[in-house]
Length: 113
Length: 111
Image 1: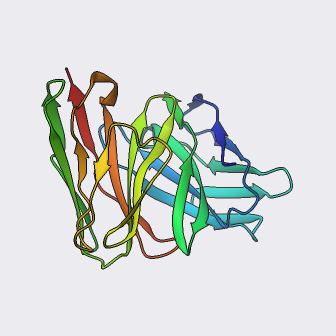
Image 2: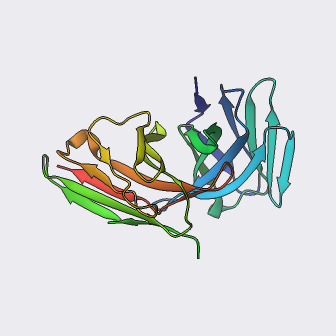
């Protein structure tokens, strides 16, 4: 079955790196996503990684995937106040060629000045 | 501009009064779905549709209905809303894996 888990809260000092972790259960997932949701806003796709990759870097964001352990992480370098948000990880399962997303609970990232 | 548009963005209603949340996409996507977001639970899929007149239940379909009479529209219907349906609702459409677009969300409060 599908299950995606994240811790609910993370606090980080401004300028430090943030690491948000996620575990998933479905080994047939082909894409894994990170979404950002700011207060009162919708879902913003931050980045994604194919399941055959180990790492993807995009400016301040680094995604690491350990497929053996079904563990995904998002590292945000030089965390800023604008990074305060809820971060969702999601796994993508093909549903007859279409995409079914299963989301984690979301991690609320708080930046400490 | 590629868009998924939901209306209304905010809605307060009373228990039992039927309501519809509309969703429209301009990308000619076949696959559309509805999610609800609740604190500590993430987003859970309510219903999905793989094409016109083809709909199926997601993980939490109870209390909801959908219809897909045209490719671009996928309304969510609450025939008799209850307070436990107070939530943030997202419509999504996708072409294939890796290309899912979300609407801006509809915050529904049922009193």
